[in-house]
Image (tube, rainbow, N blue to C red; front, side):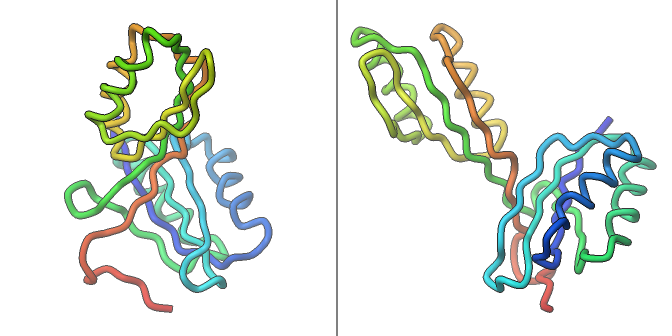
Length: 165
């Protein structure tokens, strides 16, 4: 099993995300993460999907998604040729004695403390999946109360593969 990151440029119309996820569901394909947001041109939405499977399945996914009506462009964002980022919010139980240690780890990862209460901290971290996993691993000795991850957003490097519509 291998992972692939696909970037879709789609018409910004109602139901487009439902049609894409429905295709995955009908075919029994797994979506590991999906992000969507309007582009610089509000007529279009950029969707980033991370999925996994063998080569045959991944080729089928690319072909079948590319045939959907609202899809204007689909491309694989290859590692090394693309930039991936994910946002993670982590609520950690922290009494006053633990706070400084948690903040020190957050500083090393260039994370931001975005909320402090008597019993917890909320940390915001942006980076690739390895960075986020490493940070979560270092919080192993602390109680993570809640965790929210956006999934990968990505763009290809340079201007060679930019899609102009």
